[in-house]
Image: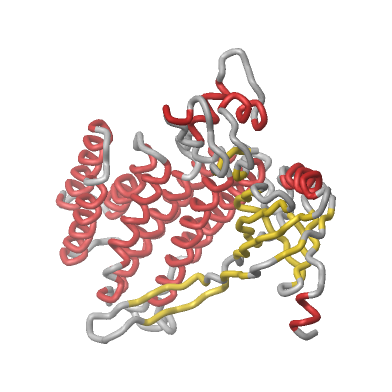
Length: 410
C-alpha cells in the first residue's frame, strides 16, 4: 500500500469499553527503545554495546474531532478513555496496536474542533500467569528472603574460604556503596541503621573466625537495608540502582572465579532488594499509572543488565578449575521473584488512576472545576485535591483563565 493510500485510511480507536471512534489524525510518530548494556574496558578505547529485545513502543497521538457535534464526540471519547482496559487501534501507518494511554490532553479552545494529544505505550496481553491472586507484598518479601537464603547457601558451598584479596575487594566495594548511599539518606535513624549494618559487615569480614555464610549474609543484610528507609519510593529505588552501578563499574576487573561469584551475589541481592522496595512503604506513589511504570522500567532494566553482566563473565565451559558458571538455583530464584513482582506491579498499573488534561476553553474557577472532575463534599477535600494537583496559587483562587492546562485523574 502506498503512503497516499495509507494517509487516506481512517484511524480507528477502540477504547476499553468496546466503543470505537474514527477521528481525524495528524503528526504520526513513534519511538522504539531497546534494552541495552554498555561495557567499558580500561585497555580499550570506545564502548562495547550489547542490544537486547525492544521495549514497548511509544506513540505520540494527535487526533481531532470536528464539525457541529465535535464537543459531544470528544466528550464521549473522554468517557470511553476513562475505562482502564487497553485500547485496540487500527493505525494507517503502524497497523494493529494494543496500547495504554499514559496521559491525554483535551483542547477545546478552537470553536469548531476538539483536539486530543498524548502518549500511548504499547502493552503486552496479561495472561493468567501474571495475575496476582495472593498478597503481593507478603509473597515478594518471602520470595526475596528465599532468594537470599539460596544465594548464601550456594556461595558458601562454592567458596568455602575467602582469601585476603577477596576480603579486601569486598570491603572496598562495600565502602563505596556505603559512601554513595549514606550521602542520600535523609533520616538520622536510617543513617544510624545503615552505619551499623556496614560496621557489622566489616566486622564479619575482619573476624578470623567468621565463616563464609555469615559474611555473605552480612553482605545481603547491608545491601537490601535501603528498602526499610523512611524515604520516597523513587529515592529508595535510586539507592539500589546506585549500588548496582557502583559494583558493576568494576566488572572488567573481575578475573577470578571467586571475584565473579562475589559479584553474582552482591548484584543479585541488590536486584532482589529493589523488588522488595517496590512493594514496601509505597505510600501514594502508585496512585496513578505514571507512578508505577518508572518502577517497572527500573526493575526490569536492572535485572536485564544483571543477567547480561553474568553472561559476560561466564566462562566458555566449566572444564577449568577457575571457570565461572552462574549458579542456576540462585538465578532461577531471582528470576521468579522479578517475574512475580513485575506481574504484581502491572496489576497495580491496570487499577491505578490515569492522568488526563484539558486546556480550558473559557475562564472558570476552582469550585466549578473540582465539581466537574471530582464532585464536591462537605469537607472540601476534592477542592484541596484539585488545587494540589494543579499547583493553584493565590493568584488563581478566584479565577482560572482560559488557556490554562488543567490536570485531573480518573
